[in-house]
Image 1: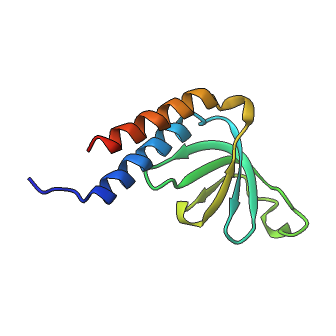
Image 2 (image 1 turned 90 degrees about the vertical axis):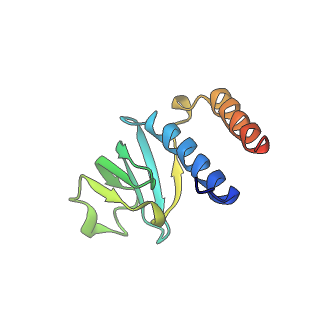
Length: 111
């Protein structure tokens, strides 16, 4: 069977870790800042393995800078253009996230 290079395996495991984390936030309000400085606030509708995001009930954080986007209520955001994602602090179980990250790192070091 073909062997997957260690770096790719680690990257794939990390991507799956992020995917499962973001799937727990579906239905929650998030803010997505794009690499072009546009920030969008909305309800996370879905996320895929490429960390592409669909937002519902979307609003532009600075509508005065982007008046042409005021009427847009739903959008698809390609994962590669995302700079940051702001999460609602009360929705993130930081202890669970730290434990999960620690377990994933330990699993990688055993390979």
